[in-house]
Length: 169
Length: 169
Length: 169
Image (cartoon, rainbow over all chains, first blue to last red; front, top):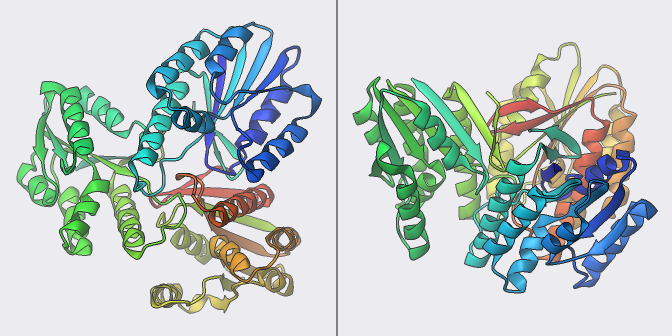
């Protein structure tokens, strides 16, 4: 397993940077796992735009929930997976009322035993004011916990600020 | 005075890292000053869980407001104090309608003249959208000001991202 | 063009640091472009306090919208401009219903062709929870995009945390 974790704020250039490092990798089958769902026109437009930007180099799989399954199925030393992003995945877990702790544990296991290369994108969402409602706090805590776990298993961690990648591990 | 300041977002691993560096210190009496108050079941559970995680190595003092007094009383070269966290302390100052500027000045003085070791934990809360209501903005500005002052007097400052400590001073 | 970009959270010491590096520059005419508008007493007091802190070394220009024009007019190798801050400028663009993409493009062009020295201050606002309302998300995305562009053209980028400057470019 070779895992690069890219974390940063909204519009900090995470996805673009993830794609740029993915594009430099040669001789691997490149799979882009998109967790976003086109639930409204705003999201639909974003998804479409991103897919066009990626071009034909990447095979896109839209998978809002079962990313662990997909990672398991795709495990092969000649495969590069880019998961974009954990932020929406945790959001989807809560919307679909799944057990997020269990899902997170499964994901960590599948990432750890993956035989190829992985690039994972996630957001830092814990540096603003404490959210008022309990569900949002729960979401923030779950994502923060997951980000720590993924950073821990990764061999490289990049913190993005204003489009600038800072290697912190 | 030997002060380490640990700042980061929610669920970035600040407390765990603070305890891990505290545990490596030998031959000191270890005092944990908790500023959290068990005002609701969610908070109560968090406090209880954290106390269990710390174990018997630490003596816990629950002090939501008068941390300056406690620090003054405990000043001794054989004492290690861990303050977790300033975020809730500033919140408590506002709830109890104390003069936050005066309290912050007092704290800075007491930290600066403390004879033992100190580890201080706080949150970065200023990297989200500007809060709508004035009280929240005031809170954010006070905490930001305090964080700057504590970082200034500290000989070591650690920025936590996704469980990864980054020494910035 | 010699551009230093200073980005950080609210109350992280950005403006103070920007002024401190500006003050070290000798033999230049120093222009402070303030984008803040005194729309309420809170803001008015902040603006007044900041102006006093700067002293007579700086000529202050209050310009909530047309900063590109001003930069163009002032372009000279003996001029140092400090723009504080982009955060409020993008806010003003939306309030006055201008085309923010076009304005941002103009600004990037004017900054890139400026003949003197520039220091630009902006906020990181994308590390909190995703805002509920669309306008705020749009604001956050525009500012994030602008921050990336300015960081890209700058020869020096400083990330501020708790008053500590971290050079990331």
